[in-house]
Length: 333
Length: 292
Image (cartoon, rainbow over all chains, first blue to last red):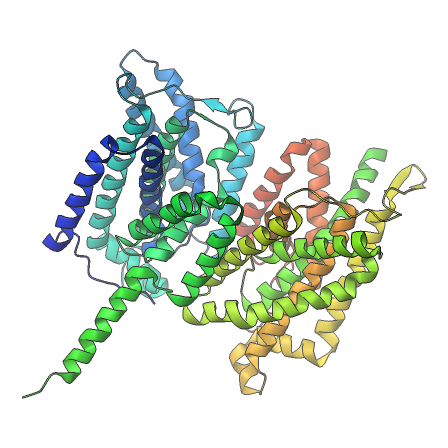
């Protein structure tokens, strides 16, 4: 199993590199080409969805294979809601209100789904989520008033004097940082430890008095709401989307992949995983589009076989081994 | 009235093939608890092998079923021996979902490279023939597909019930630990089971290749289809796969008739979710579940 490593988010040795990289990301758009800004945008988006997935699935062990449900629903709620508000309060207000409404709607959806779906365990839960995501996608393209088949045009929400790419870059960065902090807070809290105990042994933790039902539902709602908000921003960033461009199975799987590569159930695992995979797929492999999927597939297999705990898990176990050998070699007096 | 009977007939014909496409998946799931997301890729590989035999050698694809099953058996055997058993050993059972998904990506992309992403179909001489029975019309290809599927399912069922290999599979599925105590090499049985599952996927692929067009991208559709059939019918047994497949075939054709052709996928997923909520082990239940 993945070791429950102590969370040292608020320690100096973590905070300094974190704030330094944040500073670099804040000034980066001045020096980068639009293409690289877009790659970084996608990186922040990926970090956000991966950490949100981790809050439910990584902490509590309920692997969702259909989290793109919330990206799609979030985008469609925003797309339907934004034209209703209108522009009389300014563009930023439209964006923020749509993001909030998408978040609220996805939280509500996650709450409704939680009771029936979270009774299923393991593979059945994974596939049920996949089924619900596909069902929602199919329905959104089959009912004309949702407009998944024709596509929705969402009003432009970036202020006139800023390049839209840069504007959404900062929005995605902000969201990624907020979500990272939420995850770090949850992991340290009583709630977070409860979720981890559900992952390790749900029946035992229930017997020991952990309110497993309540914790699972709460985690699901938080995770769904965060992904929904990101989905809304993603929709605004696209400007025009159809059901297949937001309900994407590869989003669901990428969320799992980023966590898997970095380390499931850790705070920085998804960040590392997303950094590696986004860099690999968008920068290194952008010239080799025809074998891009093949390499991703091979990478999944290799990672699962060679480092089941992800990069952070492997590094942690190496450190533990070294410390163990040190303590046995140390002279006893 | 005529249209309802015709739709019913079409549903049954479609369902026969759907059952065969899911039978191997069902066996693997029932015996090892592994959900093989590469199953659809195996089906598509079977279809492409049939395409190669038909277009290059000019052989009737149905005659090639034993050979294609053999090839996929060997492929499946070694996949389980290496990738999947390693993943389950080192990580959790859920990791098998990920490795098989990775495998599906690799296989799909390889097919894309070798055969190009174009949609293909295999059309032997009897492809476009029709038989009229009274006021009903029957596609000859689909009828052949249904009969071949039923034969294969019967064969699988005999294999599981009557042979000593089948007894070993059932024993391992019921309690792998007890089976190991009785001297069964469980890892070997797992590998053989996965091989058999893939072989039946290949056989289904050949029949699917004849009756409908396919491309490397249809792989995902066949995986989901297999899962829905299993969740509808029951895990592990050919009978469960048959019932699930026939029901799904009927559901698809009647949805297309009553609600509209664009709703068949939505209906399929709706039924998947409802079944998972109320009876995740399927209508017939888990074939090997008695002692669990």
